[in-house]
Image 1 (cartoon, rainbow, N blue to C red):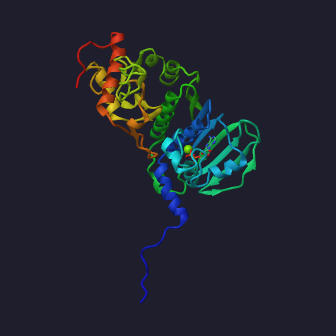
Image 2: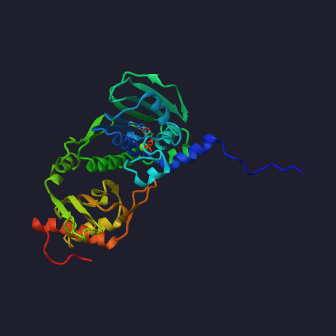
Image 3: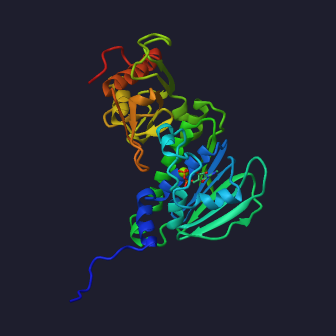
Amino acid sequence: MSETPTIYALDDATIRRIAAGEVVERPASVVKELLENSLDADASRVTVAVEGGGVDGVRVRDDGVGMTATDLERAVEEHTTSKISDGDDLDRVGTLGFRGEALHTIGAVSRLTIRSRPRDGGRGHELVVEGGEAGEVTPSGCPPGTVVEVEDLFYNTPARKKFLKTEATEFDHVNRVVTQYALANPDVATALEHDGREVFATEGTGDLESTVLAVYGREVASSMVAVDGGSATTPGDAEAEGPVESVSGLVSHPETTRAGREYLSTFVNGRYVTAGTLREAVLDAYGGQLASDRYPFAVLFVEVPPGAVDVNVHPRKMEVRFDDESGVAEAVTTAVREALLDEGLVRSTAPRG
Ligand code: ADP
Ligand code: MG
């Protein structure tokens, strides 16, 4: 007796599209992946230009190392990366990307065009991938570096496309991503354009103050104070293995605040993270001097020994957990508080909490 089966195996194209949704959720995720690739390619200048909040198009141009024709062809294949070559490398990843899946998955759910020319000589080439189908690599007269263009995002995954919000909201997400990377990399000239208009452009001089000025404007930049806290111990000291090596960056005057917490940026070992522990530690430093539900601006770099932090490496999460949560919190609060006290911006009473 034969029955009609109700369970079928999915075809490869469908499997790819489902997997793509895990990495690429919205235009901002495309921007994040492309920006990370540009930074990994040692770019000193990166321009992100989006149309219609990124829904209509995303273009990221860099002056990084570029790719040869062979590498270009490989770059869009599944699990191909130049960043690690075996499992051992996984334990000491020094680049932002390493999974080798971003270009492949973006290509599966959009029309992806890459033009690239090696920085140290050689010709430029172009490759178009549409709905997962890669075309031929053809010569292209492009400048050294790489330009990646993503159009018609989610055209073949209508369910995912339906989840996109308004252009304004999608652009908000894009803006946040580019802002975090611009702040984390003051030595890279990072520009953001929306519908042909410049939103911000940093100079790439390596100076955090001028980067904050470019990103957040004069009012905010002029209210920032420098944080420069090391661990309580001196180098070479037997007790130097505290939970935190250094805390540095800029935080705002207690009256320069916003209703949203997105202006309180924290970076652990150079990587942007969202960590309640760090956010609360910064707020504690203000000792109740902030209006309720208001958040200061902060661009804070926390360096910890590599073994002391667990970075959840899921592509969409930027969460971290510290071995010594309270030790890290205390070091951050102390460093920020000292900076505010130095400027007479908080009273020297015990911090709240
Ligand atoms: P991953 O970044 O995890 O290696 P991707 O799919 O994002 O995977 O990229 C695949 C490969 O393509 C990279 O390892 C790199 O060699 C190359 N690549 C991607 N973007 C660029 C770029 N902007 N400049 C130079 N090479 C790039
Ligand atoms: Mg990548």
